[in-house]
Length: 197
Image (tube, rainbow, N blue to C red; front, side, top):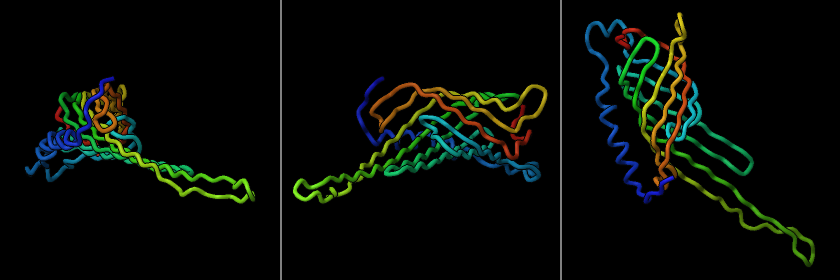
């Protein structure tokens, strides 16, 4: 594991670097496109260090995709929130699978509420220390390659399984290491016109 200097500017740099992927993704304006859906919507579950863990929504415009992931977690005296946004660019298309590159951004927020109490030695009365809240905020950012399979042998399958591997900066760029990501998503309006096989 490699340690690097904490620098918030790296986060903005990664996001700004991938903004062109978003701006280049445009909906077709030809007459043909009016008759068919040009945006593919997907929903399901995601698990990963940089794309986020929890419920996931992904959409594609031609070869460009964006995924949003969110999950809350509540326990007694402890709450966590996970949020992610990731960007995708398909490099190779086939009728059964896609190869793509991705860039992921995962934000984690946790609050731990601590309260201590005890008893006074003179009269056994209970006392409380002022409650404290321990806050932890972390970014994970990464990029890599991925493989998506979405058709079983001999029949149409509306589910897509994405498997990704790459490099990631963890805990606000304090550590760098490999990463692995998974996503299982249902394709609502998979359109063969969107994938020109």
